[in-house]
Amino acid sequence: MFTGIVEELGRVVALETEGDSARLRVAGPLVTSDAEHGSSIAVNGVCLTVIEDGREAAAAGEFTADVMAETLVKSNLGDLRPGDPVNLERPMQLGARLGGHLVQGHVDGVGTVLSRTPGEHWEVVRVSLPAALSRYVVDKGSITVDGISLTVVEADADSFTVSLIPTTLELTTLGRKQPGAAVNLEVDVIAKYTERLLGLDGKAGGATGANGATGANGTTGATGTTDATLATGAAIGAQRA
Image (cartoon, rainbow, N blue to C red; front, side, top):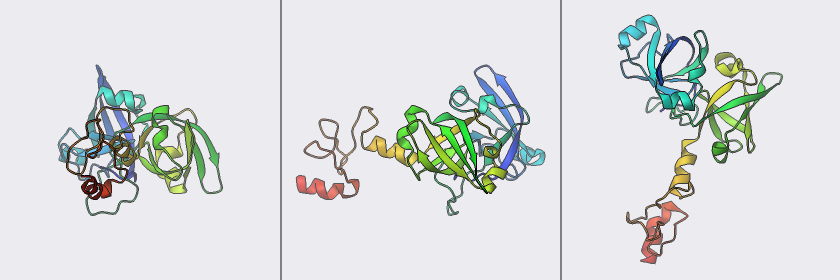
């Protein structure tokens, strides 16, 4: 689990294609300083696993990770070339401050930078939004773009805007990406879980009632209706029994 607060602007050392997968090597002295074999590091918002010994990674200031076909299809990692900058973040620690929002490092889709509108000390960037993700993005909500936790300024049906402060422009890839560039998108995981629990995702199966049983028609409660307020489900179930 990550927070979307980029720790370091790393650099791609190599990307070697191996059939339907690839092996990525990235330079990042900070994020490799305490790396171990099996450690997770987010690269442009994609959670990857360090495959070499941690002491080797720390000494070299670089780490290697395997990238599977699903990741190559669902993210922009397959487009990387040696020398390209990448956003790097180590996993969050329990008990530490959550500076951004809950980020899994599981990319939901790829958007495209549509425009950049400079201000006096910031820039407003508009990014295209895949149709399947638009329902999860709302004004003033959170979204992860290339691993960066950002606040949505305006959410439209097929795009959204974010405002980038000087620090974000200087220390992340979004300070460099121009219109036409691909960016990884991860929507707020809470929105996805809420949709599934309420049965609004169109998939089979219903929500579970307070007593753990599911109604005959796939919804909750003794009468087969769904409790809108889950927190009071037990009390409502008792009154209906």
